[in-house]
Image (cartoon, rainbow, N blue to C red; front, top):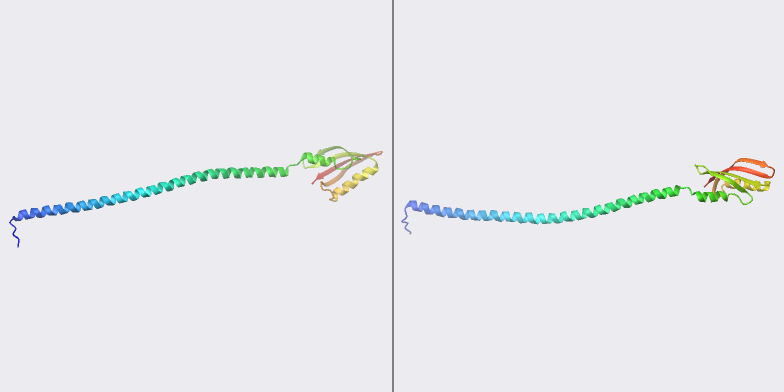
Length: 178
């Protein structure tokens, strides 16, 4: 058995001091836990931020590469469009020198082509002359051959005017190239 000689007020004060000490100890433990929790949350936030910054840099690099690539693609597509446009223009372009050489070779040498004009629709008006009716027969045979589709260069030929002065024959034709 233990004998306590302290008065009851002293007992109360010791209990109170022990209780305060326990409260202080519990406060330290709770404060430590709270501080530890804050440190853990801060570390998690730092790790998340580093990961997010790395992803952000990757996104910026990818975006910059895409923008460079897209500008090259746009330039490439624009060049392709222009090339197609030029190609279509060149395909539709009328080659005058080739057409003039073709008209000059319309008839063999006894037949002379005196003049020819090119109309806007690609039709040639040809004036020529020949001496003798045998050579005029040759002109008529060539016209029939063209109109029958036997010519690789001419689509059609129409005799528009014919005049005879003795042995001299003068004619005017309308010729369409293929």
